[in-house]
Length: 112
Length: 112
Image 1 (tube, rainbow over the protein chains, first blue to last red):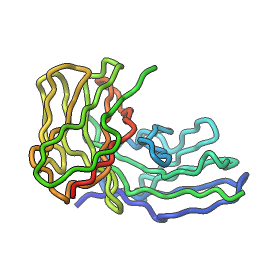
Image 2: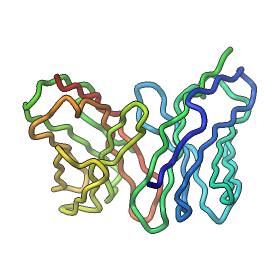
Image 3: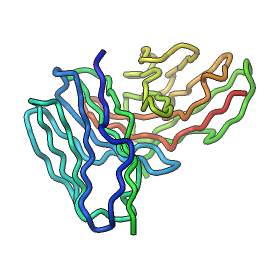
């Protein structure tokens, strides 16, 4: 079946370094992708999204890259801070549909 | 403040005792949904609602009911809870045509 997965369950980075969180998707019909951040004890929070007609989108300290050829999505966090410690999920959606399919999440740990 | 609220935040109950988890949003969103989050499985959609009196099954609807009598509220009902429904539950909402969902803080349910 179609699935969204993450390459690494846990990622540890030093404060100030850049973080890269990866996500693979298998549904070639997916045309919208979202990254969510979930802090301990809280609900997922929207970070950034990208549509399939783009290959890069930048936000504040975050960049999402989309490679449709290999069905790969990544989230880059610049100058990672302790407050970035959380679980990060990617999610995908097929255009016009209502269903979001979520990945299992990557735990980002920022070491001081 | 725009938000999605859930109650209770924590609940421990016993098998077979009916319970309701409430969800309310103050953003006038028409679309609402319920998810459960389990380790290694990510977020899975239980039910969703496109508008008042319009509900539909998600990926894992068995053992759950919902109702949507008012736009702001979308309660999740477990008529006869079982231990396999022990999970972390999230309610979410979004406005029509938008892709970004706003999540509630979560309800941790334990069924003994």
